[in-house]
Length: 237
Image (tube, rainbow, N blue to C red; front, top):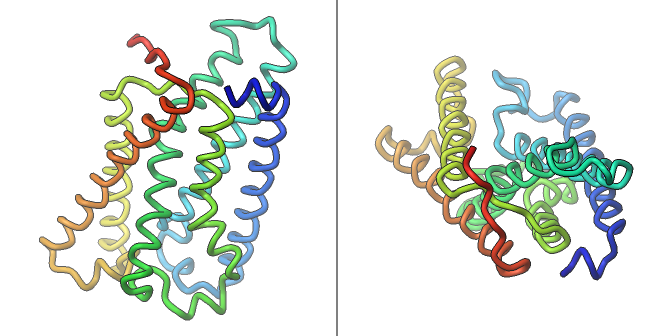
């Protein structure tokens, strides 16, 4: 398998490089938004109202956790099942399955589909003068290839589908509630497209967007199985 071919230390190095890349990207994103040039970050919710930034932060935490897991396994190899390395591995696998892969894939696919239809709905032209092109791709393109690299170099144990879908649904519900709360407080929709829709259309759009994440969850599970074979699901506690 990939990890065997690459060598036991190589995934750790890859995780460190990817984690460093995300820290660098988040730092640049925060630097730009903190400058006041991005009007959206000055309104209620700041940068934390955008799924793109939430996902960027999520990917940073995830790959930081991957690197921490590698370090723990390397320096404490005798701490087997039930130890910190085992706990971190389970946490890493759960975050990848429930959030990192489906949410990251959704951000990439939904952004570019809407961008191709009408970029003003998701990424108005004035942002080209504020956000460098490389940073735009770091937030909306590079995420998916890096997740595919992760699936290739490390086998993951996905939770039961019931728990996985429930966790993803909970995240989607909380984010939608956050979007509606921001509009309730500030009168501004996080994404311009929501302002062009009727209340019914808005509900259908958000529900459809949330449901789109479910097939992406299955896609991550399927890719993991194709690369590593059928891994035993985590036992229900």
